[in-house]
Image 1 (cartoon, rainbow, N blue to C red):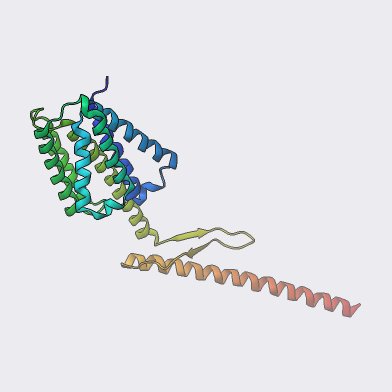
Image 2 (image 1 turned 120 degrees about the vertical axis):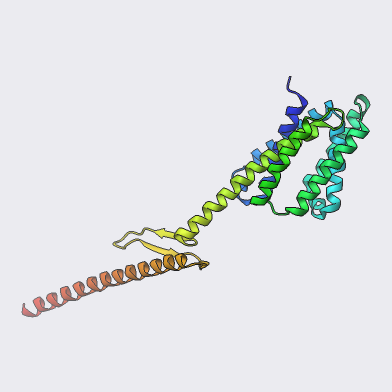
Length: 263
């Protein structure tokens, strides 16, 4: 049988995936509406399984989200946070008669997690950055150390939840920063929004600027200069081709006229 700790790690990881789908633009296009609804369903199932074994978990989630809303007013506008609080409260009412509530461990766990969440939110408000990756990597080490402390001092499923949340967060931020870095390298090497258009009908391929580039260094100037010169040469060659065709038509008409006059 899968333990509550495994459920907690999966719960934290899926919760962070769902959160980053809306917070990181690089991830939005990779998830369909079906996959998003599936993730939401799995989150609800895992929270129910965890709560059935430990009532302290939904109590901490309910109180923790309530405290977060006090420091982050935008959370009140999120249906996700509102639904989470409602579901956690319902689970507390359903599980309370058959579970053991540990006041001291719940209080200590709630204080520790609230302090960490508030510090994280105020110090690193951005969705993704190298500094935030370093901080959350340090937080993973702290959580692992806490998991080796006495079982009665903390509500351990919540720290396993934090472990899954942080690990997925570090992975997602690293992936996001990598995608942004690749995009910057492409812009640095090829300019901004460059499209290579291959046309037919005896015309040469042309490079068209779709938008005004943001020139920040000499390499960008060189790239743009190359593109402009390339376009000018193409236009010139296309113009020469048209002039040549016109001259041939004129010569043909002159020959026909001369032939008719001689007859």
